[in-house]
Amino acid sequence: MTELVHAMSEAADGFGRLVRAVAPHQWQLPTPCPDFTVLALVEHVVESLTQYADLVVDQRFDPDFTADLAGADVPAAHRAAAALAIEAWSADSVIEADHPMPWGPVAGRDLAGHLVLEHVVHGWDLAVATGQSSPFHDKLVAAADRIARAHDERVLRQPGMFAAAVPVAADATASCRLAGFLGRRFSG
Image (cartoon, rainbow, N blue to C red):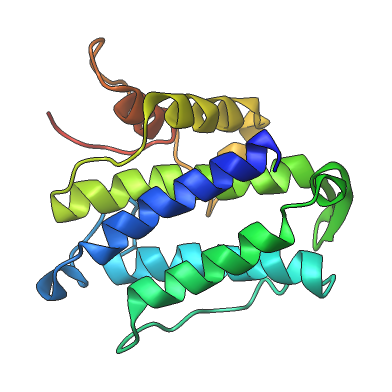
């Protein structure tokens, strides 16, 4: 298993722990990710996992795919989608290949990295929204930070991606520094 696939697995496991700890009354809470409730945030991550698994397995990426998890076993839905994506991306040949996206070919390493970043940053969103501690160790957060900072700023900051960076305290945790770089506003 490549280092990137191992990071995907660790990030998905940590995110899954957060999802399993969401209390029934918390699904409709807002998150630091604008326009996402807790449920919508998890649906978004499940959508990304499903789209990226389909890209490898069926050689198609459906930008209009949506996951409606209202009334579903949300932790099980995330676990299943994560397992499929990790299995699909586990071969070095998949990571090293270019993959057709609606806007043009993208390196597999970049797409797999995006799945790590999705889990870590949205895991931070989920932890903040539900009052949980981040389950991600510093090495994984550092990997996600490198992935985020390697993006072209024009791509990273385009609508629907990440807001402009916001300042964070000098003594902020690695997770909070990453969240600030990706435009998350928070107090404390």
